[in-house]
Length: 202
Figure 1 (tube, rainbow, N blue to C red):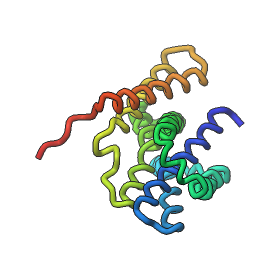
Figure 2: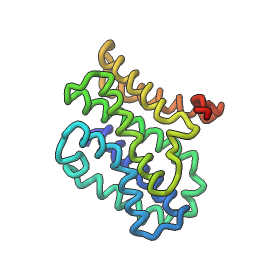
Figure 3: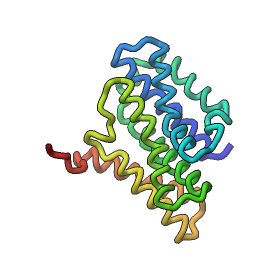
Figure 4: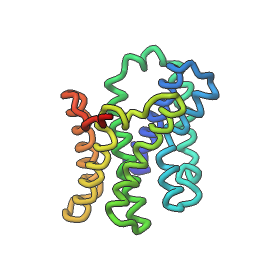
C-alpha cells in the first residue's frame, strides 16, 4: 500500500469522526450517527464519480473504506471524552483529508480527460461535498457557505497541484506534499487571522 493510499484511509476515518461529532451534538441515535458518518466520509467522492459517470463508485471497489468508516464508530464512542479536547489535532487531520481528497478528485477528473478547470472543480467536490451533506442532514448551514476559507483552499490547492504537475519535474510524492502544505497553510492562516470571503449583503 502506498503512503497516499494509507493517508487517504486516515482522511476517510477522520471525516467519519467529524460526522459523528456533529451527529452527537444533535442527539442522533446510533443509526443516524452512522449514516451521517458515512455520507461525510464518502459523499464527496461518490458525487464526483456520479458526475464523471465512473461506476461503481470508488468506495464500492475497496472494502477498506467502509471498514475505516465503521471503525470510527467504536473509536469515537470509546474516546469521546478525549476527542472533544482534540480540536486542533482533528483540524490538522481534517485539513490533510481535504487536501488528499482534492488531489484524488483532481487526478480522477484529469484521467477522464476533463478540461483542467473542471478537473479542479472535481477536486473541490471530492473534498467538500461530504461536509455539505453532513451539515444539511444535521440542520446546519454548511461550513463552506458561512465563514471559513474552506472550499477556496481546496480550489487554490488544486491549481497548485496542476501547475506543479504540468510545469515542473518534481516527483509525484513531492507534489502531493507541496499541495497538502499549501492547503494546510491557507486554512491555518485563515483561522488564525479570521479571514473570510466577503459576505453577500441583502
